[in-house]
Image 1 (cartoon, rainbow, N blue to C red):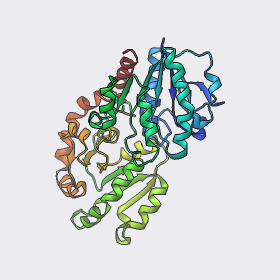
Image 2: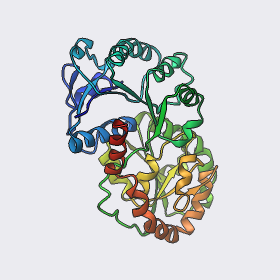
Image 3: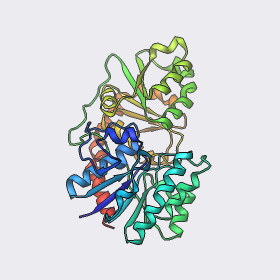
Image 4: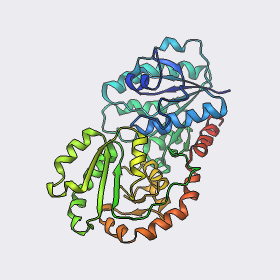
Length: 360
């Protein structure tokens, strides 16, 4: 039996909403919403999904510890762990400083006792934070580093880790839907809906693409509309930027939870997925494909593996007229490739990779 301590940066409100009490508890196998409620994909896909799978299928014991949620270090006394997994460090500034100061003594204590330390290195976008070096210091404790994109091998931090002899493994994000049920094949009807969605970085990329999108609207047929699903604070800013003559073309929908998002996407035809992060993982793309949406993407390296079913461009907006004209053909190609592509990303496939990793 593997005993795992998950060290995470989820805050107190998120911690308690998932059923934790007193700052520290056994891993909660069944969240209140089985499709996960956190907006942060890193929590849903790199904490909840794989660890729930390991608890349920391989009898893992997982404890959760979050300094930012008020976890008390004394609760770890006399406990024995085979592994410590440091999840994505979604903290910066004073929070990162506090998090680091609390967990370093824990890592030193358990490392001396022979506990293997793993770091899920997914936060490459905090490099502008003056205290980012603290996050990098955590890599020096790791015997094994997990990355969500093969192309992160080229970052200097991973290069340095490899030079130290640290092992680095790639595990992609899993899907969030039951892939044993084939997604409904969508045919163009009276309207064609284009969806764009995601967290803060995804919104920033969409915002950067908005001018290109607006400039191309005279080439986009009248029966095309957009559904934009982002956090409400982003939609508030976005509303100011959309010209009044085009407001009826954009349906601004505040993100509430993943079931809501999946329901909306299931009624759409095209996924508009610009990105400014060359190390982005594939979760938005694979979710779109699983729901039958034809994706239009930026040339993110991890997306190139899906080039047979994905339209990739440095200016994704200009590809919309092409996808509109060839929608039926592209949809057919997507359907023919879905099962083969998605078999690799279902939760059991990704869960097995995590299980093998803990046995390394």
